Image (cartoon, rainbow, N blue to C red):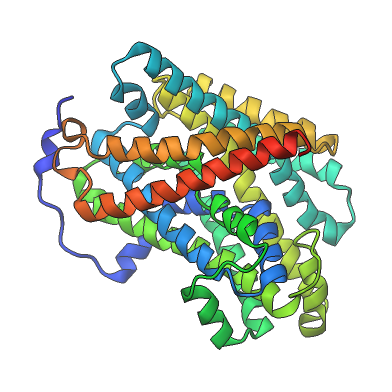
Length: 419
């Protein structure tokens, strides 16, 4: 592969914090993607069950996400190709190349299709709590709105929608955290002194698993190309990644902290239970705040799922990154179509979800390890390969992802067979 001449151009001088805030874009899509109804519910249950004790898991997951997403964003900017292209071109053996390509496409497409129904129902739950309209009616309506956004082919429109949704989630969930008045000493202990209370290992894995999402790696490598085209843009991309994902981590942490401060020891069935405990403090606004936050979380994740699947398939099959491409729109349509039908039927595809969980359990460590190999390919990246420090941190993250993947796979298989 020929390295672009622009690869050796000097990078610009440092920018002000105000300039850094202006570059937020592709990273916001990643944050909006992983903050979905599943994340909200998982963080709520974690806080209710263990208080602040496993808050450190969120901090670890954010560091891991930043490390992996920075790599794939750098890959997209330097090569102007997606991670799918790199996966396809990394291996010369046709059998291994073919197997890897189809594993990636099937696992991510099935995973996105399986979870889209839950995202639409989560979005609908936020509206239904305030309006009383059944979720199986609201779900398809939300799905059609998301479909129209995707078929518009406008990346800038989707990016702006995601940024607005993040702002809404930040306002609602962080506000409720301050209203809950958590114990600061216990909070810092849980955040910076890792412990695994009895029975918490599955919850720790769930918190990490809802943040480190395989398809986001493919999504990020493609979306950065819509915004940046040369190595001098890497600094902007890094700030976008760091700021956006840290905001996402703060939102997740705020949900856990609020639950830990208000409903510790209570059994939680959904994130909506949190509003009941906040009513004595916030009055009727408790339901409004939680409903709006849940709607924003569901809508952002539901928009990102079909987008991630479409960009992954487009990259792997060498279709390019044009969101106006009919093939891109077809994949987007199929994924969101599954969600619309499933949410309309109020269908919870448990077996499909378990299958998707198993596939993602295999995919996450495979992609993490493969990404490390790709990011050390000098023919592809020139002087922009990983530094020793990034390789050490990345290897540790990949090791944890492998353990997470193996456990998730075993857990999914056991659940599938009712063991």
